[in-house]
Image (cartoon, rainbow, N blue to C red; front, side, top):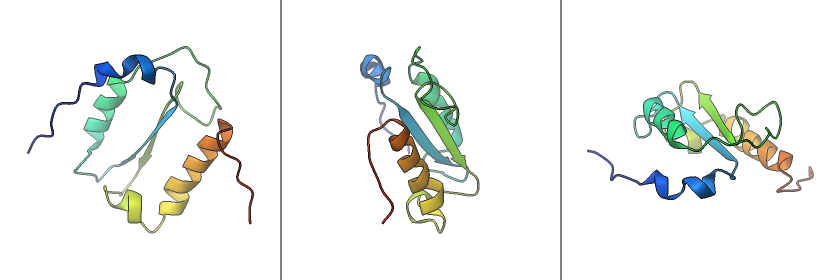
Length: 102
């Protein structure tokens, strides 16, 4: 089964200014690492400075999680630490959310 072709080129101009964080499990058969790598190659590169040294490239950040599959990214035992915490950290660094501990 092959997914339908998606024309990434139609979004490239807009995406050049959007910070993107991708999460990928190395055991994911629905979005295997080779497909994620290809997506990253298609995403635009830009001259915007990194938000923080913690993030790998200007506005395209890949977090690869060992021994995770597609559903683990949602329901995995360590999902909060491996997914939610980095998302919240990234949004805080962009000053998009204000979260205070309860």
